[in-house]
Amino acid sequence: MCASTRRSFLKEVGAGITAFSLGTDGLQATTMPGRPPQGPATSEQRKPASVMAIAAHPGDAFFAMGAPVALATHAGAKSCFLSLSLGERGSPTIPPAQYGAMQREAAQKAAGMLGASAEFLTYPDGEIPIEDEAKFAVCDFIRQYKPQVVVTHWKGSWHKDHRACYEIVQDAIFYAALPAIKRKLPAHAAGQLFFDDNWEDAEGFVPDSYLDTTPVFDKWRSACAVFPMWRGENGFRYDDYYANLATLRGCVSNFSKAVALMSSQDQRVRHLRTL
Ligand SMILES: [Zn+2]
Image (cartoon, rainbow, N blue to C red; front, side, top):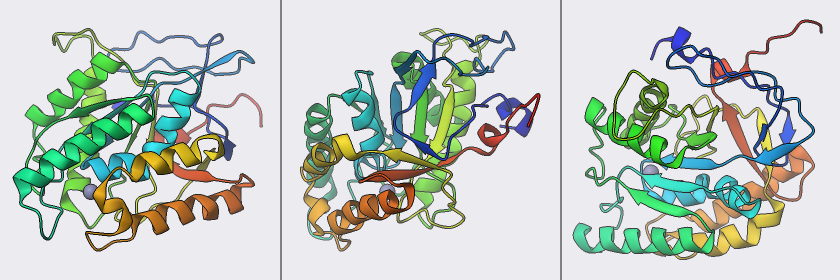
């Protein structure tokens, strides 16, 4: 997607936010094809924004993106997890077919605990293709769930599936918003795009938003614990890392627990009439 087509993902982002929200008035929808509605979200009357977490693997979706989804559902917004792969090759001891089924089951259970939906595409773990077929598949889920906020991987990752997910989501958002692209469901423009704070995607990750996840921290952690890998069976201590990361991010944002997010470049641009 070229820069000009992404230029409309413009929302002013505060340094610390307590919930994703969408202004209900003062929002002037544009009619530019392929562009989401934009305008100042200045209303005092805000409603919680629905969130869609789109990850390469279920673990990423829940461990690194799960708390923002949990916060959204906690506030009453319909939200969803979408995994592009089951992460079936992630276990050093369990065969992929068996482990993939375990991952799917864990994701469905964890999503239920958080009041969200779990969706899957079953591209081979390690081989998620950066192709239009995948982009349109994600586009269809965006049109189905109509999220106001999308959270996905940052591109600065050593993991090729994570980089692929980043690329796929950029274009899927674009395709989903274009009315002229005819699919089974009508176009939907996701208003905001954030990148998650993932231990594998740290290169160039510079957070600009801190989301207060204190109200859902315990629930989110319990949901993550459904996954066998959460306790470190696969070689990385996810529980220690992400639970303590929430505390660390909370320290610097003056919340008890927080998740750090990075806005897409275009979203950081502010349109001002005065300083
Ligand atoms: Zn992953």
